[in-house]
Length: 139
Image 1 (cartoon, rainbow, N blue to C red):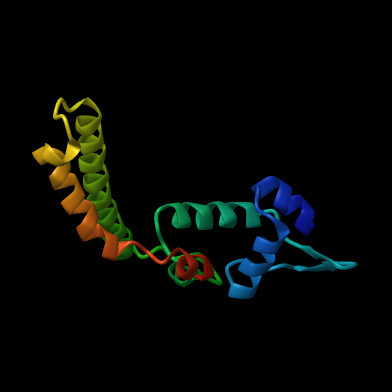
Image 2 (cartoon, rainbow, N blue to C red):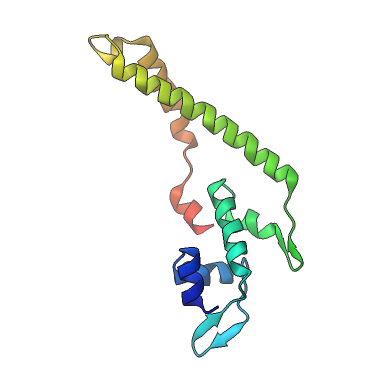
């Protein structure tokens, strides 16, 4: 498959495919003129990379799971990431519930509502924990 076919099949731009190749996450088999050629199994590898990214793994963490023989997935790392997701789900659930309460709250002013004030305190504490989006896009 040439790079345009892989881009179409995976939904990823060619620039991302070239970046993944530079990072060692995928490998082309050669060229046809100026176009990189990939084996058909690159689509499965790209799906695994996408799954890892959606689960919050960095590209470096994903790269460590690939060996020349194929994927070697670190089960302990999967459990750690699952625990992190559980914590995030708990935070998001509390935030959702707080927002719904604030929308339906009968208090004349949201700053008079104890639940809303609790939501603000949680949001204030989490502000320092927000990931650096620019740094994350680079990895």
